[in-house]
Length: 169
Image (cartoon, rainbow, N blue to C red; front, side, top):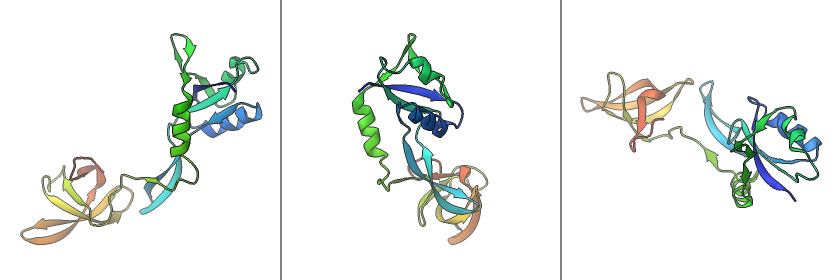
């Protein structure tokens, strides 16, 4: 058993690098998570790389050359510190593997849910409270705003809304 190292991959080529490293007998790990996003006006759940542009490799330096790993298709270079590749502790890899297990159904999302209390942080309704009702396209949300003691529907960009705790949606 070797040591875990951190590799930087070429842009959006994590899966290519993993595939080519596996062919060479190098154990690799690219953590993936399920993310909820808006696509064409609907909520979709997609599998995405947790650390875009990076992956972990485990190899024994006596049996596999670091040059071989570095020159693999999809790999850019080792992440280094003072000229030496950064070794990653086994405990960190174990924790990441448990949290990103394929059977883990946890979804990462910053999209508001029906009835969530939001605050308008930009535009003519700035400072008013709003209640999320639905998604309106890829970049907008339909909210209810209390104006003159009546709830009025408004379609606002997600960028002008914030959760009540201060996090932008």
